Length: 231
Image 1 (cartoon, rainbow, N blue to C red):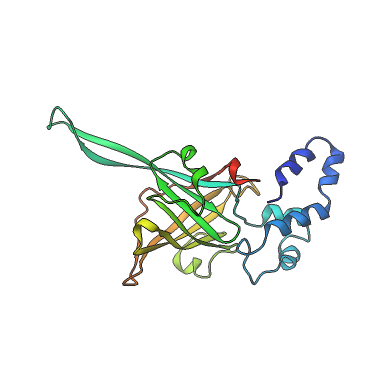
Image 2: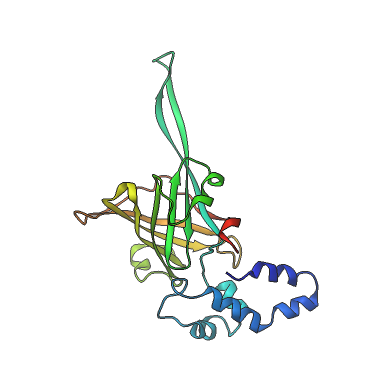
């Protein structure tokens, strides 16, 4: 993708560079390199977005239009407890705290990679490519809904941009697909570095049964750059 971070860093060095880097032609190129399906819905044109939502300002469009970041992974950490056994005294109650991580990587062609593991992200995110195979690793497809979903209000979901992940399949669980709905936002304007899981369900590919899955370990995902993914 376009190296917009370097442009912004250059702009901070002096006012002349700030003027140069605000040129509409620079940001128009960045917008067209960034916003294409599934980053925006098929039915929406960039010219419509520019005129109707972003005051005909290319830089404003890039900053304020919801987008997933692809030069890294969105990572959430969770923990749960499970009972254990004391090796020397059976009357002593032992509780194990297990920590695990879910990392999600979005690809520009609409594929998404998800890896749930007890291994820390620094040992796993660089392995996440479509050819990778491991228990807890799944591939699916993603779509962006910048204005939210049509049934958000009816189902009580919060307002804001949503990402839907469909057909998420772990090859070690071949009878099931999974579906997630995530809310996308950011800690600061234009960062788009935070996701909250709103819904998580399994689909039995044999019976067609759809089951909501518990989200007892519901924590937000935070974006972390991964150098090997590129800019």
